Amino acid sequence: PKPEPGHLPADAQSFGDFVDLAFSLDPHDNRVRLHVIKDQDEVVNKDLNILLNPKTLLLKSGVKR
Image: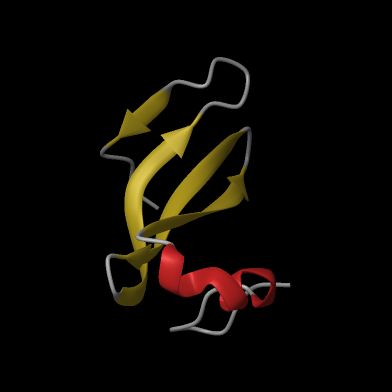
């Protein structure tokens, strides 16, 4: 299940204070879209406009939604 906006996923809540940077991976056609969930002490949900190719593990930036 997706976490509520402004929260880490339920499994990560207990150790969230020890995490500085957290990403979520969102399947998007044949690639995976990266989102920042937590950056330092701020919990955010920010789309990075970056796709991960799961076969090559290469990142492609500047991608429109």
